[in-house]
Image (cartoon, rainbow, N blue to C red):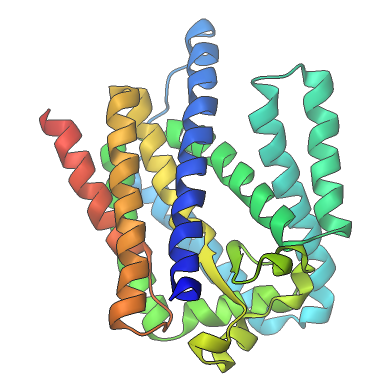
Length: 285
């Protein structure tokens, strides 16, 4: 039972830490935006959907057509840049630029040449917090809430027909995985990232699995929604939406544990539904 509750506890901790860091960064951003009279462009729903599905289709075609041996280095460099960018966004708002740049470079290089599970999870959390604080500002809460509901439907279909698992498996084979990894044993936090393969997890029974994974989008999308609410309605409303997103994530883990018996579960639908309840409350209060 302890091992079954492990992803439940780690997932909740990741969401709480990500929300806290994102709100902190967004608060610093708010001061910067007000001082420079920067307002949100309020990007409409159409471009968001087109961009998201365009990236999904392009990535799927690349993974299907090009051998992984030719993609591994490219993907690893892209991930290193993403992690370095996330560290820069978070640190640039709190530290001098002269310190933020070296920290970002060190983070990216450390992941590229010394990718361990704990470092991957930490840098992914920071990168998602940076992305949430930046991109959440670009959308109205209603627009992004509708977008999340649409993506939740896609998540159900993609998991049901194996597309999401196939993508994750391919990414893990290239030593990159846009997901949090939660080992059952403390010693496995020091494992190299290349030792984690989605295909290995699928081939084993629940009791034999050494790790569980949580998609980065299941954390990143709620962060963006919470930030968009933050810039419109303030911190208390954003925290409320974040708390409901956390409840939705916990609900997804419970569904997997009690109902689907550790089969792959699309976590975004319960997260989006719970976030919608929180969003409606903020609109009514």
